[in-house]
Image 1 (spheres, rainbow, N blue to C red):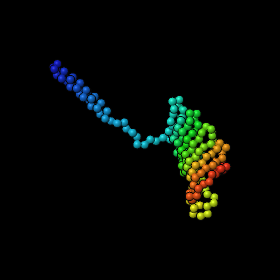
Image 2: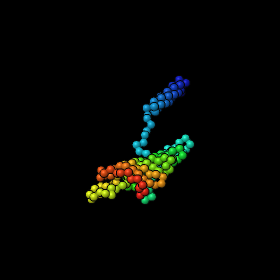
Image 3: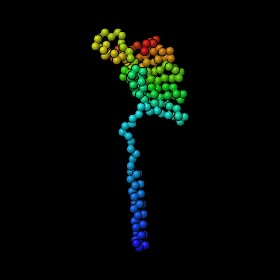
Length: 164
C-alpha cells in the first residue's frame, strides 16, 4: 500500500469517528430524561439535612388486618404534627397536633358520630356513616366538636365526651 492510501484510510477513519461522536452528542442533547409512569414503593420518606425523617407516605396497619394509606409530617423533634389518611372504615381524616397538646389533636373530616335522636329507620341506616366536621381531642382524651350529621342536623358541641 502506498503512503497516500494509508493517509486516506487514516483520514477516513478519523472523520468517521469524529462524525460518530458529533452525531451521538447531538442526539444525547435531544433526549429528555425518562420519567417513570409508575413508582412502586411500600413507603416514601422525606429526610432533612441531619438525616431525620420529617415526613412519610406509607401503608399503615391499624392492628386489625386493615392497611390504609397515611401521609405524616413531623416537627424538628420527630413528633407527628400533621397526619392525613384513611382509617380502617374508609373515612378520610386530617389531624393536626401540637407540642403543647402532646396527645391532643385537631381532627377535620369524618367524626364517627351517629345522631342518637334520629327516628327515621332509613335515615338511621344512612347515618351509620356518622357526621362531618371539626373535632378537638385534649391530652386527657376529652373531645369537643362541631359539624353536621348526615341527616343534615347540626352537631352541638360535644363537650366532655370521652367515648371516641
